[in-house]
Amino acid sequence: MRIGITGGIGSGKSFVCSIFKDYNFKIYNSDFQAKNILNKNKNVKRLIIAEFGELSYIDNILNTKYISDLIFSNHKKLDKINKIVHPEVFENYNDFLKKNSNYNIVYESALLFDYDNFKKNDYNILITCPENIRIERIMSRDNLEFDEVKSKINSQIDYRKKIDLANYHIQNIDKLETKRIIIEIIEEIILANEKK
Image 1 (cartoon, one colour):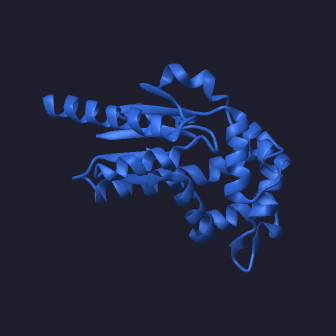
Image 2 (cartoon, helix red, strand yellow):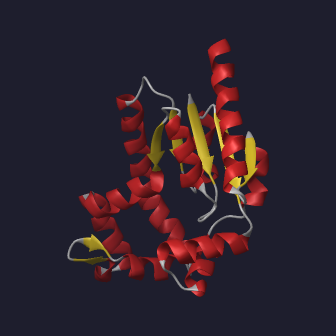
């Protein structure tokens, strides 16, 4: 089975993935892989420097502060970086699928519904959360100022408009309640898959 999990920054995607991991699902974290690709893929580095300038990397490592300041205040620049990185992420994901062909897979991505890739999943789960809770979580987790967090949130799509694309929509406000719902969903989809 392939499960897509999406939601905005601070919505709780990683928490939900950790529950799937307990059920022996293999997790593909596209954000983590994108960062890896940005730092290790020579072709991607060359394209990023050509697009955003020499300040994009310091000592061969992505200058995240510089890039974040550029892309989170400019949708065109954000779109450009996504067009450079995400084809590589999808290629990396396909390799991951081949290596883990005997496992159920979770594909975690904030951009799940931005590309047609989500249609290849058996189920897609959208995690949402009130903005004030997301802001608190991100400020505490990433040690960021309010304005930086707000800018990151504003750069992402309005997930409420994507609810119809998801098989399941979970509001992650109370962790225990979210865990209970996710376990129900996992058991339901495993049972449905066994009956096929």
